[in-house]
Length: 160
Image (cartoon, rainbow, N blue to C red):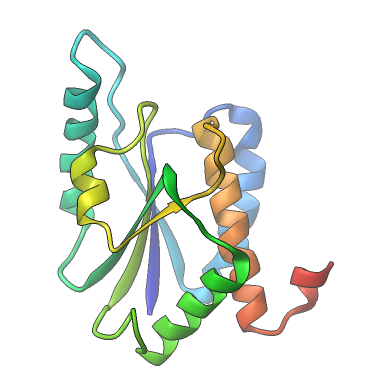
């Protein structure tokens, strides 16, 4: 099973670029790809209009058979071992990944995700109950997915 992570625009703050790039490099051998969708500038439009414009871009990147995970602070806290079990299920074609070709994990723009994306999602994960800068959320998500893969692979990283 392939995994695609969708991020909005450029990483901010820029000081996190090295951390993001390091985890993207570590995840490549596991078949994880990262794609960027254009985020909207906060403007005179309503927050809902801005989020829906981003949602349209997100939907264009989705394919039939995707298992969509939306990252949102109102989601369910995901734990490392749960994430590892989901990755195993993806490899084995087991529930809840049966019939799914790809897992797509998406982080919203500056205003978060549109309700339409949350409703379409197969799962909504909270990376933290805190609202965090988009760059921090990226690094937290990438490290969490990397850690889950190391659990699946029985690599010592998880216990370091």
